[in-house]
Amino acid sequence: MSAELLQSPLHDRHAALGAKFAAFGGWDMPLEYAGGGVLKEHAAVRESAGVFDVSHLGKARVRGAGAAAFVNSCLTNDLGRIAPGQAQYTLCCDENGGVVDDLIAYLHGDDHVFLIPNAANTAEVVRRLTAAAPAGVTVTDEHRRHAVLAVQGPRSAEILAGLGLPVDHDYMSFATVTADGGELVVCRTGYTGEHGYELVVAWDAAPAVWDSLIAAGARPCGLGARDTLRTEMGYPLHGQELTLDISPVQARSGWAVGWGKPEFWGRSALQAEKTAGPRRVLRGLELTGRGIPRGHMRVYAGDRLVGETTSGTFSPTKKIGIALALIDTEPALADGDLVEIDIRGRRIEARLVKPPFVTPSVR
Image 1: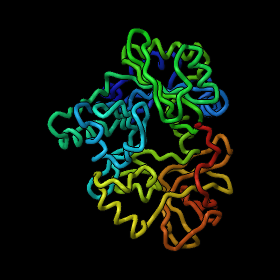
Image 2: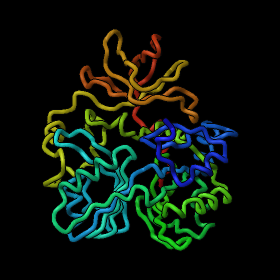
Image 3: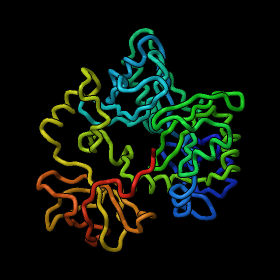
Image 4: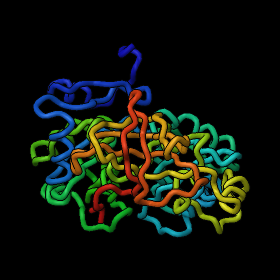
């Protein structure tokens, strides 16, 4: 099976560091590394700095006269809210309001938008945009032309500055520089809740950049720590908190929808759901007792089934089990109310809370 999976340009580097690999979105990616594992990698990001190879993420470029306006007519968020040199979290929805993917849009100018979708959904996002593109606008799948490295943690700026990379731009903005003879984009984004950056580099230049980051003190981190970090922040993962059956309204991602825009895919369905009120919404759960919740576990209020977990893990920061769950809006349950999660046949008490579970430090 592993022979059929795609590999990042850093695969040999990961293997040399004793990485344990796992299939993710069609790619063979490091889950954790020898010499510490998820808990130490998680702590490194919260306390110092870690670096993730997230080259499995998709890359697509939309160019041509009116490219930004075209993208804005398709994706949910409003590109008119940002200026060139800024990035924006947005969603690609279908006509029913289901989420095809969530992605980051880098606005270079009126005629140029660079997109970073999720690995497994890149081809579908590109297909939909290509099918809708007007004459003169091109959509190019550049999935394997670029690598993406995420440097996250309180020391991330110090480490990048020490390598001569720009670090003073605002959150959700990017700077483009030349490094190792090629273009390198440094964006103030991340998926951990910490101050951090994502570097978009040429595929062949990635090993040299990775080596420099490790030498400067960033700890290699795998997708296991990435998941515990993002869950502590309540960040959605496509396929779990966002799917074709889970809308932005249900996932509490309505802040990433330009409700005043006249046009975007799924607008009518989402407007109708927002007006009527969703039948379920994403909530946070903190276990009051021992146990580690996972996805697709039933949640009860008394004897009544009121929802299902979408993600769950042990929080290395809080030292308790935490979960995200889709909870019915009727009967109304308030933050602080107690429910129970069925964890492998045992009902474990949990408290409803509003994510994030830890204090964010992204800015």
